[in-house]
Length: 154
Image 1 (spheres, helix red, strand yellow):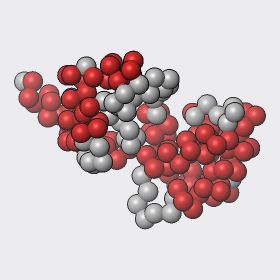
Image 2: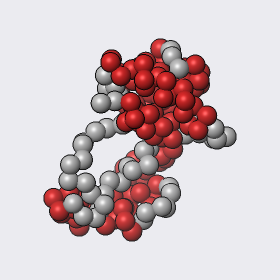
Image 3: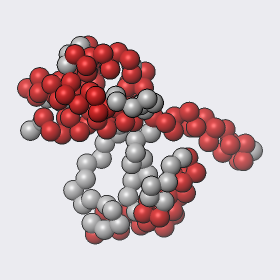
């Protein structure tokens, strides 16, 4: 029964792997060992290594193993799901520098109202680099938007 449940869970997660953030494994020895490897298996092995050895706790408290002592716990799951479901509309809004979909992304990213105009302009300026590839993923768009937000928010 346990094996069937595990197989179902892995198979259910496969379609979401393209929407995962680049840093979905966090910090730690496992992340360092499997750094640069793509796909579900290296991610699972990295997370398992990090979790079973308890090294993330040490890394966070000591500021080692690629961990940041002053990091912020946040989830990009809602933003990534939103971007994944609205890639075309978001692309059009980013290209023009305004629109409902871009405003919704800004809201999900907690971009302050006072910084939104600058964020929209940065998204417009970065449009070609974010959507420039043939097969752009939601994760790439999220990273691009987060970069734009980091340059425009106080």
